[in-house]
Each structure stands twice: as structure tokens, then as C-alpha cells.
Length: 91
Image 1 (tube, helix red, strand yellow):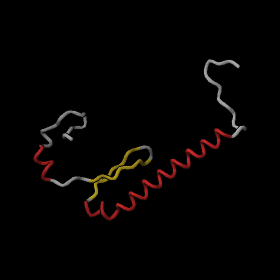
Image 2 (cartoon, helix red, strand yellow; image 1 turned 30 degrees about the vertical axis):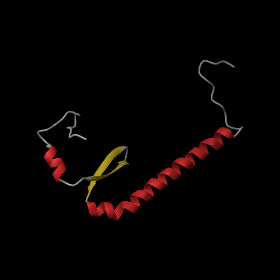
Image 3 (tube, rainbow, N blue to C red; image 1 turned 135 degrees about the vertical axis):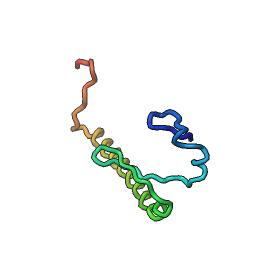
Image 4 (spheres, rainbow, N blue to C red; image 1 turned 90 degrees about the horizontal axis):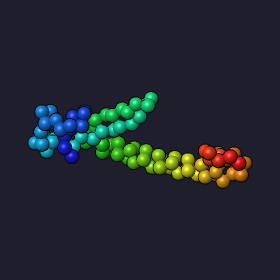
């Protein structure tokens, strides 16, 4: 990974490869709030303390995706569900 500026171009005036190797990795907690991405930098101690929360959130999101898929499959299989006509077909 190379340092880049906001415009995606290499920005060696702001970063140097030496700075990247001297400092420890930075951990970010990123989420959406009111349709905007919000990020927070976490310390290594916070990462360890909150790791189980983050893993639980991943598990919960996976379960929600499975539940949504089951709901869609159930509705699609229900003969009472109106079918969408294909564009251009006249039947």
C-alpha cells in the first residue's frame, strides 16, 4: 500500500515510507450514520477491548442477510405474489 492524497495521487510531501514503517498500524471503526460514512481512529487497546463487539456485529449482519434472503425466497415462492412483467413482453 502506498500513501496517497485525497485525489488518489501519490503525495510524498505529506508522507514518507519511513513514517509508515515507524508508526504502528492505525485501526479505524467505520460505519454509516444518516447516509454518511463516519470513522473513528482506535488505539490498540481499544481494538483489543472492542474486538468481540466487532465480531458480534459481523455475525449479526450475516444473520440479517440470511434472514432477508429467506424472506425474499418465501415471497417469491408464494403463488399469491404478483409477478412482474418483463419489459417489452405483451401477454
